[in-house]
Length: 98
Image (cartoon, rainbow, N blue to C red; front, side):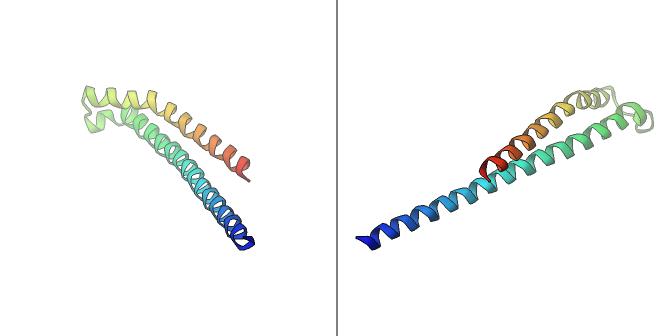
């Protein structure tokens, strides 16, 4: 009976350790996704500003392409904010799980 109790206790601690490792991995993925969103959105804004305001004459952009560039300038900051909130949530989860 005593051996059975020890085995159950070992199984519970192993399961808890595995779940904690999986949770930490998911939090890290969430943090990385936030970083990727921030980086890609920042790059998209810079490219859209270049296209919409500086290079549209040289590249002979159509009106549709210019409108899309201007829309990216409007939408991308919102995506940066979402990425930043994801980073904050992941950091909070890291400190909570530690």
